[in-house]
Amino acid sequence: MYSFVARQPILDEHQRPVAYELLFRKGLSNAFPNVTAEQATTCLIAEQFLSQPIQQLVGDHRCYINFPYSLLLNGLADSLPREQVVIEILEDAEPDQQLFDCVRGLKDKGFRLALDDFTLDPRWERFLPYIDIIKFDFRLTSHDEMAAYIAAHKHTPLIYLAEKVETQQEFMAARQMGFTLFQGYFFSRPEIVQRKTLSESQLTVMQLLKEVNAPELDYVRIEELLNRDLSLAYKLMRYVNNLRYRAADPITSFRHATVFLGQQEMRRFVSLVSATSGGENKSTELYRMSLIRGRFCELLSLHRQGWTDPAEAFLCGLFSLLEAILDQPFVDILAQIPLSDQIKQALLEKRGELAFYLAFVTDYETLNWDRLKLRAEKIQLSEEQTINLFLEASKWADQVMSSH
Image (tube, rainbow, N blue to C red; front, side, top):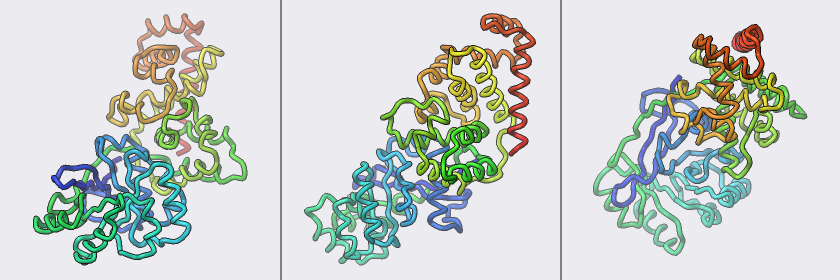
C-alpha cells in the first residue's frame, strides 16, 4: 500500500527552502482530490505522521498543515510533533470565541500557527498575539492592501508569507512590501511523493471504535484488538510518542499505552484511523510471521515466569519485522515510537532476554534444529513443548487473520 502527498517548498528571501507545505493527494495526479478539507487533513495526518517518520519527507524543515475549523476544535492538532509543524488555519474558519480559545491553547503548548489566505477581516485582530505567520494570496489580495496591512503591523513579530508568487516581478514586489517567506510556481510546483505505508483492518478499527466509546474502557479487550493488527499497533505508538514528547516512561505494552492516553485521546486516535482505514491487502506472509513471533515470544516469556513481562515480549516479537515491512532501518523506526530499553536492546543490539526469544523463533523459522535444541535446553523446554508452543502461536495467528 502506498500513500501520496504533494510537497511544495516555502522559501526565504534568498530562495532557500525553510519549510514545506504538505497537501493531500490520492494518487500521482497533482490535483486536490474530490474530498472535504476535513477528510484531506485527517488522511494526510494518518498517512504521513502516524505510519512513518515525517523527517523522511521533510528532513529537519518544518511542515505546514491545513486545518479546517472543526478539526482544530476537536484537538487533532495535539497529536502532531509541535517542533516540526506549523498549523495553518484555513481562511473559511469562523474567528469565534471557541476558535480563539483553541488557538491560545495551541500556542501555549508550543505550536506555531499561521492564518492561511488572510482576508483582512478585523475579527482576526485579537488572534494576532498568538499567530506567528500570516499568508497572503498574492494574486487574490490587493497589493496596496497587503502593503498597508504590513506597514500598520510593523511593530509586531508577525512573519508574512506570500503564496502564489509566479513571476520574478511578483517576488521582488513581495520583498519590497515586507514579505520574508515565499511560495508559488515561480519557485516550484508541488512535488508528488509516493511513500510506502501500512494499512489497517477495517473490522479491527470498527471494533476498537465500539470499545473506546463504551461508558468504561475495557483495557483487556482493547489490548486484545491491538494485538491483532501490526499497523494499528505501530500507529498507536507513534500517536503516544507525539503526545508524550519523551517526558514519560517508555511504553511497555498496549494496555500501558491505552491507560496513558485515557478515554478521550483513545477515542480521538481510533476516530482518526477509522476515517482512513480500508480493505487494502497487507503483505500477508510478513503480517502472519509478525503475529506468530509476537505470540511465540509471549509464550516463551510465560514459560520463563518472571524473567520478562509477557506483554513486552509480545510487543518485541510483533515489531521484529518492521524493517522489512516499512523498508526502514530499526534505528530510524525505534526513534519514532516509545518502546522500552529492553525491546530496543533486543531489536537493535540483539542482546538481552527478549533477543534470546527472537533468536529462538528465528531458529525455528529457519529450521536450525541444532541451535534450537540448545536454546530449548537452556530454558528447560523439551522438543515436544517447543513444537507445541510454535503450533499454538501459528494457530493463534491464523485465527486472527481469518477474523479480518
